[in-house]
Image 1 (cartoon, one colour):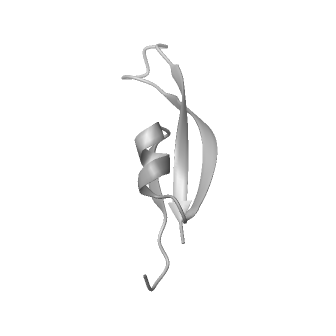
Image 2 (cartoon, one colour; image 1 turned 180 degrees about the vertical axis):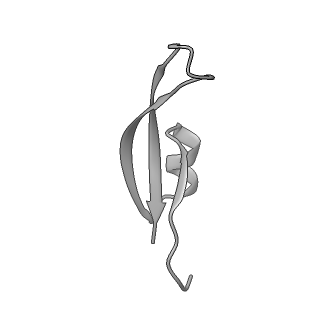
Length: 49
């Protein structure tokens, strides 16, 4: 693979298995819907070569 890229995805087991061998960084995120105070803490991953 050539070039530079970053792919943000949900942190699920399938993502870790699919992108095994690449750099995977876990990050904490907060999803919110329409700013109504219904925030949800989630874990995402950033994948790069």
